[in-house]
Length: 168
Image (cartoon, rainbow, N blue to C red; front, side):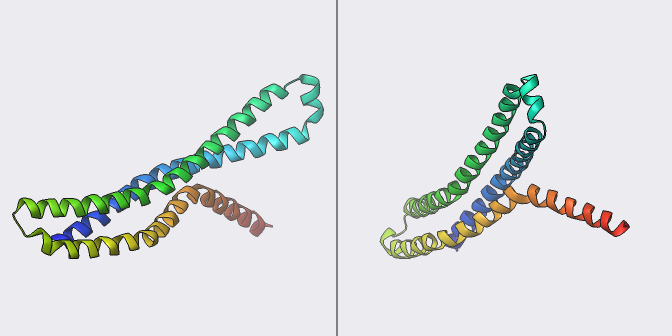
């Protein structure tokens, strides 16, 4: 029963950690969507007003804004990649520390540690074998949170276009 509670605790802590990271990724995804939109707008503006850029000498201003948008977009991608790696390492750390903590609790209660080590080692090995599958699920959830604003934007554009087309 104690070992079961430890396993449930590990999975619960991973779920809470994933939810926290998901909220961060939703904000990052929204920022990336906005900056990608800004980059595309600048490219369209530059191709449409080539003469104005040359005559009015505003290329430095536009280049700074484009570089700012590109930098923010790149930073969001780097942070998303970094955050996608962290949960696996945290899960492995929780499994190891949880197993060690379980053995320390048994030791403090005066239990025979030698009889629990094979069971704890087997469960720890099984949980470590489970980490890649949990990580794939976690990456899918994180990708969903990161891409959610892109999908919502596309959905709203498709719905608005279908409403416009249905009126004609």
